Length: 200
Image (tube, rainbow, N blue to C red):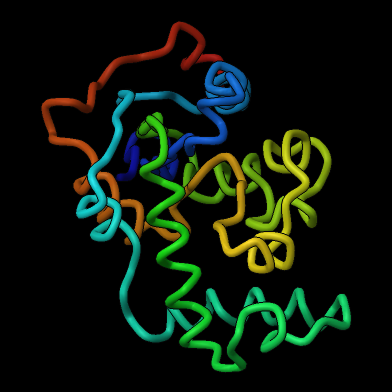
């Protein structure tokens, strides 16, 4: 949405604190990182999603699934590892399907925290704060860079999802879809932070 009075691009994005983030008691830390950057939490809940709900959250299209496989194979190449030996396949789509299954299992093993975060260019800002999807490549100072060291190679060899603490929508369109998937309109609140007028 756009604030026409100030010409500022205000957006909403979805953030999930994944099971490892909840189990490691990092929920407050994650929320504070966003609030410190002048982003506003407008919806928040703890839930233990059903497998069907998680299945609908993650895309099923071939390009997205193949990209999951490509990420793992790239890590194997960097480490001089044979993907077939590690995962039992050299097919990127097949590997991606395996990773998607591991993701769904991972996201349903414990409760998660779902939230909607609002602010100027919120989608991009949240992605910066969260850091690279691969924690081993995330910059220090980001959530993943500070609290996780996992990699796709380590995860794929162990036949599990990457434990990267949080999910953040990648695009504005993805954010819109994901927010409606996790929250009803009645669960999202409009309010003004006390410091908002000083921020923009």
